Image (cartoon, rainbow, N blue to C red; front, side, top):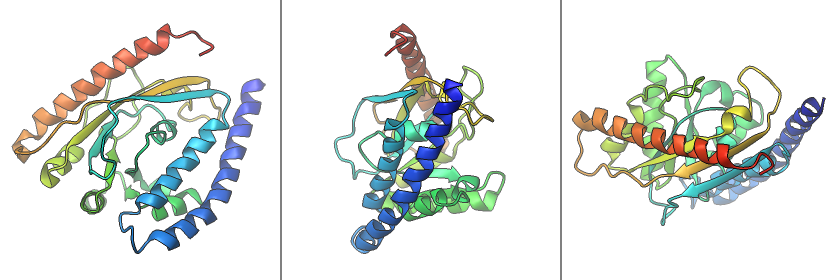
Length: 252
């Protein structure tokens, strides 16, 4: 019963925050659009909505650690493993803006999709090669405007403890634009929102930012090596985070 009550509270408060946030984001967008073509400011406000929603959730304890980047306007291609829809809320705690590459179904959610469009996030349709090409071009546009992009190269949420295969797109994008890769390991979010259920679970989760991987001098022939290097970095860090979380007291 407690879990159902808390879950209802979380989803209701999420809806209320979104309804309050959307008109404010519209005002920020109108005020900053000309001088901020990368939509950095309005995007930061969008991520603050996720942080606010997390703070209203008594079941979640999220934190970030690791190598914080010195210049938030240096564009990175950030890549992270994907365990849950709660990954979005966890990664929004990082203190710089990144444009998300997200599936089209999320963009179709009323209010949420409107805010994602104002923030400059990138829409992609699974199984549509043309959509993937357009999404990568939009990602290049964000990088040119000195805003990082966030791509989850597994493509979907993993259901087991092993990382899924990483797709090439993020790594090709990084090499083609000369942008460094910013690996981020996530652990603990799988229990936060179970796939296929509306119930919110208790979760302690960590996002750990790993050292950037430079792509200067690499060619597209180097994509497989780069991809597997980053996957290994994230996998090793994720395992360490899982051990760290398991060693913490249950009340932490």
